Length: 247
Image (tube, rainbow, N blue to C red; front, side, top):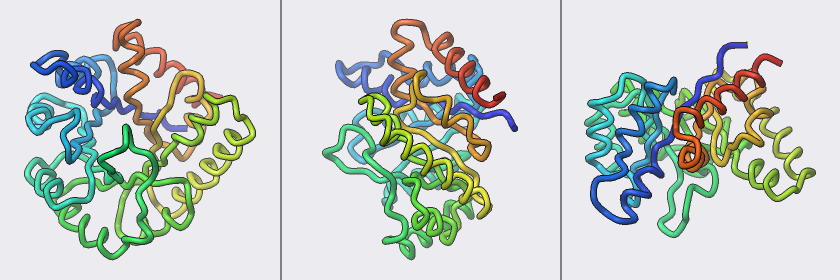
């Protein structure tokens, strides 16, 4: 199997910074450290309410990074304009609700298919790879394919939550659903990524899917870096991913 890429989400470095205000810790510094430590890409989510990453962070990331930036954003006119100005390597369209702590589920593509098709067309024309963050659901995958997305990112949150809660029946059911939908999306010609809630304890079964080309992991790695440092935290995740891929 091909090597599995690791994308590091640096949003929650900005969460810590914004809890007190000021300039530290700097998410751009974290992104450069992750890049220098072997990250294959950096993910940053510019939310409408700017609760963590800010506009200046995106400006600085575009200037500083030599690995691809995956720009997560809601499907709003404001975010489209920002993406078209910067033209990052990839844009990932995600659902967004002001009251949520973190992204709670996948985007409802099938219900908004026509609108989303028109929304992503200028992004593709500008050279951005368009990814859609969705649940492992055949209807949503088919809709993502029809609107012209090149990539889907499967929301792994339900699987990770069930694992953490010890609900292994639900965990295994979620895992099998993601396994089947990864293969289905791949057969349609979509590149498959996955992420949300992945930890050392639950990453290997997802990493073992041959169709998955990239994992995007943020909160856990940033939290673990408090105790280990970011480079060792990433190295352990990389080791587990590679181990899963080799078996």
